[in-house]
Length: 276
Image (tube, rainbow, N blue to C red; front, side, top):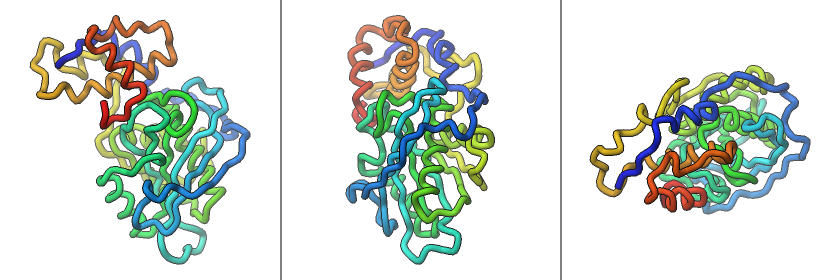
């Protein structure tokens, strides 16, 4: 099955995907207070001695002004807390969906992510794992919105440093969408959160769209032969469109998708990636 998209699709949404390096003062996060609770054990990690769900104040990077509350999971290693606190891996997760209930903190982690994060914990790093705005929190998650990801991640780290015995020595690590988020966080950190001490950034499977990128550059021709079971890139295009349309209600999905794709597009707003 194939779904054709207009060549103007990614061009129309590129402003949402690019790293616009405008920033706001470091005090821009919302004024609500942090809240800490135990993380559901089913969503935890075997190498964590303690694991928590953190609700923290942030500000929407999508519109640059709206105060919001986002969530993160925090994992503390076994052993005595080192002098000055645990060094920190800030984990930026890959694509899970755009609906609230798809948040990694609300679900068991994938086997790959468990292996990644348990390895860091076993080496003596605490892990701070933000969900991103709209995942585990109010509103639709704006997929691949660089500033939206970055502000939510950086505010999550700020909150974790206040609440837990952590050292302000940070490694940003991201895979797939998370690589995009970690890259964005590293770019925004000097102005948005200059007090954070980012020592390194690790990116794998990084998606990046240059200005002027179109759907034709990303997708195979609509007339091309579809892979068995459908094109695996389609869910990501759904998420990009849904994010763009949430910011711009004038977008008409019929301008970008064939009729047989429209019901699936609607379902994608509530389905996590494995279901799509």
